[in-house]
Length: 115
Image 1: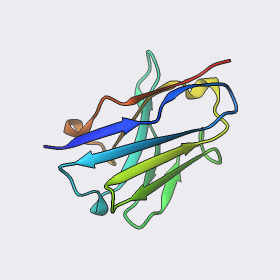
Image 2: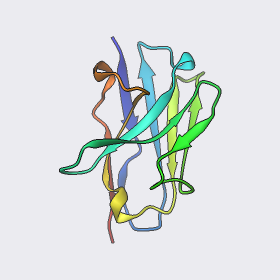
Image 3: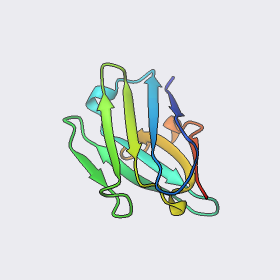
Image 4: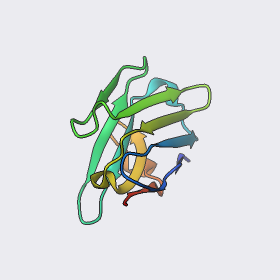
């Protein structure tokens, strides 16, 4: 059974940074494209960034140059460094493969950006 556990969210002020972590069990991350998604209240879940097995990243235009995705396959983990946070980044953040697999969704971690 696959479990993805996200952590690292919190309440921050605009311009501050957070680093999200996602650790997986029951799955070998090393061969998968991994992604971070987010869902704001009343909105659909959108992909924020993904990273291929060889480490090549890709970002949504809204976060490009502010967010950085990375992975550590030895720890079965994927990370999202978020800098220059804006109120519109407020959402629950999830990790999953890309394309996403319904059975992999975890609880997510809440990120709130507010002054």
